[in-house]
Length: 212
Image (cartoon, rainbow, N blue to C red; front, side, top):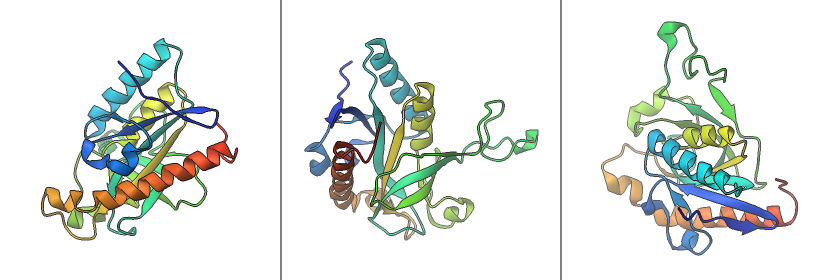
């Protein structure tokens, strides 16, 4: 398996995205991501397999970056945000006495923080789950934005002791989804804005503002 690492400053970065539709020409000019597939299961499988392969070659990256689209009913449409915290909305063992969002016997809280930051990019909280959230379903989510992969990517990174940055552009959520076009309509805008965010990341790594 060929795993594309991207050199920034003195660091090797590995990028993950869920779907080819999110990987437009601006991002294509900057790096080659591993495409995981959609949802927490596919993301967990793809990221774990990729990192295990790199570990077997003593070639783990210095930083993992997960980027793509997200939905939100409260954040600015087509704006890019970095996740400062991620939760797993599918997990609910409340009937066994566990707080909603807590995985039984794992010893982790319901919400996991992401301490690494890119200066100049607004922060938001993120909820990961296997369902596409739309319309009134946002009322059931306490986090600012929703996706389907980031929590799984984070758990895989934790297994390999790797830092993670999560960048998400808001593609939908202002109105209820009406089909695939509701998601894809503004992906070209997010492609350009996510590319700008990765340029800022490269600048700050090169300048020593982000230390890995």
